[in-house]
Image 1: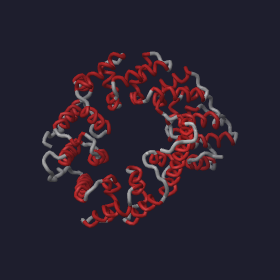
Image 2: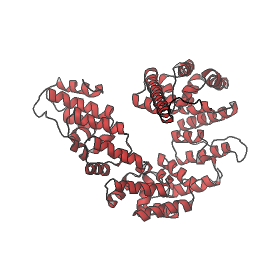
Image 3: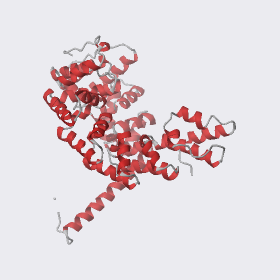
Image 4: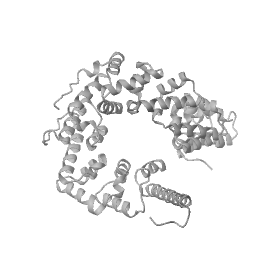
Length: 462
């Protein structure tokens, strides 16, 4: 830990934090079939049932809340809806309390488990209790949609305390002046520690959304006392900006790992060829990388070498994108297989990985869908993806498809110079640059609004 702190002190200007004062006070029947057959049959049936529930969940969320398919799929991985009975009851309840569709969408996105809660026996009494304390319907909707996990807490007193704290922070922040959170709890209790520590973090400038996430959780450093204070000082000394999410990520890592453990991880990294400065830069980019065991760090390093990357390129890749350390060996090998199935050579995959390391953690479906679109629908060569692999990280719906629709429209009109342009020219630039280059530059005044309409439509043309 000392090594990282020392390096951080040398590389980061800390003057802007010196005015911040951190207070330390603050069951089975015999089967007639062979076992293997029975197991395979049961497994297949289970998989089919799982897919059916997943498809239902996604369809329900899109239809009932107007969520995008991507958001609905993400929620469905966290909570599985069997039918629409219970979630319909929950949504109806929230609407009866004047929650807007936008607020309900936010609540379900942040806390999807609410959809499987008992609307009548669990949620309704909590909402009614909060109203009985004097909260208006609009205030209730704002606070619950801001921190929906409040409805997951048990006991009127606990719910009341969390509600009041969230309300207090929101109102104080609206007035643009800092106010201490004044509450009385049993000395040394987790709740007392939470309030004190959240207050300190708020004073440092940690954003509201991060504070509320910490406040509502029971598995965060804010429940501690002395260790929290020591960890906070270290993170401030390292120069992390409290207004960014990386500040709290670093605090989580420093809080749970001893100095000796961190030094051991740094030593392992040095043994692989990283300098202390490299480890520091990786930690700044993604503090959670130190949560990986020494064995996992070494294993990922060796797996990448197996992919055909020379040692110096592995070092460079991990320095650029330490998040790929989290990827399992099988995940990385499966990723290689996905690219080869699409027609890329092993050497081309290595180039893609070096130029766009996040490709290592993309799902096979994502890589296949995006690659097939630009190659099969737009006729760009595979080599274009090798040259500009960042396209694999762009949103297909929000960026790639709208722009490609414009290009296809121009090509269909057979205008001078309307042959297929380089992929990088179409996809890498900003929206403004794209519009100036392919939409607004035409003298035909009827063509410009037509192209703009195609661009803003946001779906694949038939």
